[in-house]
Length: 253
Ligand SMILES: [Zn+2]
Ligand SMILES: [Zn+2]
Image (cartoon, rainbow, N blue to C red; front, side):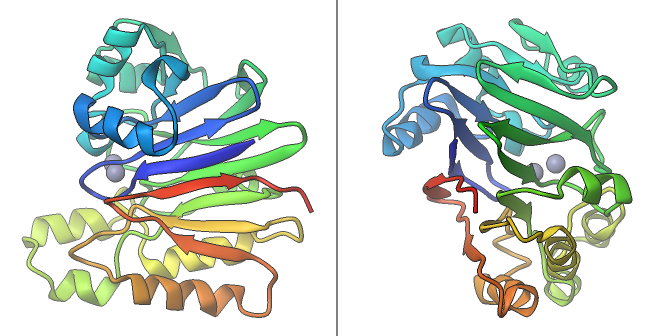
């Protein structure tokens, strides 16, 4: 299994998770044209996608989803609440009460998260004994989330904002309250704490994603990551809005 990002941040999010036999897009937060250009960087064209799995209906996650799904007959997997908001035609229901489902040889565990959307989910992907977590857009942590995202080989985690940059920054106060609230986004300290708590002996790779260009800085994210990963044999990188990150192979120690 391997994964990559076409771009990550408040202006658009989109990842691809692939096995040897299929590729699955996770969120689709860029316009159709932009998406096709970004897919080329990963040597993929839209017809190679077996499915689009959606976390929630915010525009930075679904901007190009209908165009992509309709033009290339790609099924959209989402919670019922997310589907009601986006209204995709080629819809497949994700039942997060029952948990695990599969697309080809990739199994997927949906995990409900606290975020101000209708029925938001995040996901753990499994294939050939390897486990990858993708976790963004959540305002707070719970034991359920920590348990679901434990024993991973690789994880992408939201490091959305630095608390003091957010408070000193230009956003109106209602937006600062929303972002920093329990149903908003993780700050660097919360995300680092999460990484520390889920970093088992098998974890090899941590990607920091969904970084605010206005309320955060890469150096602060790296500092937060270093504070919890120092002396650990775990590689980390920071995903960018413009380029995301290239293919990372999920390794099992
Ligand atoms: Zn988002
Ligand atoms: Zn969101």
